[in-house]
Length: 300
Image 1 (tube, rainbow, N blue to C red):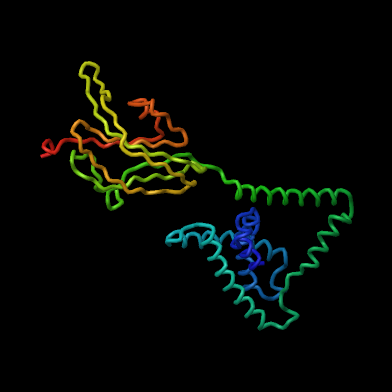
Image 2 (image 1 turned 90 degrees about the vertical axis):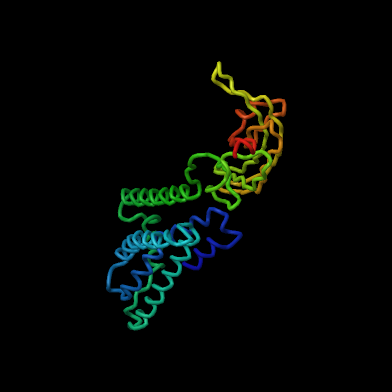
């Protein structure tokens, strides 16, 4: 059973289908606990079959969070593949212990899973129906509830609830950190930096980054500023999958003294025509960043 689960989870032609989650469930909820029970109680007379099954679920619910807690403090983190591999190693160790302990017992005392008896009991209960019609209805209802529970669990795994939809857009310094990127550039100087975009929109998104060089003037009477010059500088288009982040190297250089601001505009699939300019274009962007500029003699 362990080999079948691992095969479905990791084989390339199966691990992209819902079967991956179907077989991941027993790998997480039953098999680890059952291997512990098999190692602790190798004798058939130790505990009943019902107790083995119940304890297997209970121990799995205990073992899996403990392994997840250990993985959480490692570089691998809590993800499906590290959890399944860790549980596989744990289960294999318990299987070896169980095999050794069973080998010390006489063959007639060793526990073995009575698959044929279980299948026969289920078939007899469902097909022949026990002692009365009420028993048959009750058995069918229980099986239907179990089936609905399994289907619901599979649905939760295969169709997870989406979180907040957003896009990250930020500037990094030349060391790819946020500690020393310029919050104000000096005209005539060159600033190597990185522009980073992270897609968390739960879909593939085609982004467009535009950089513009601006000149603004402040109106003291209205206490507002307006754009008097807005010249295009660079434009880049790329596509990111959900949860994918790209970091793009960029050299910022403002060589003309009439500029006082560099504007970074990020658009998603909706990119306006170039007849949309000025503050209207900035407002139409999905995200925007800017850096102010001063002349070199003003900085000294």
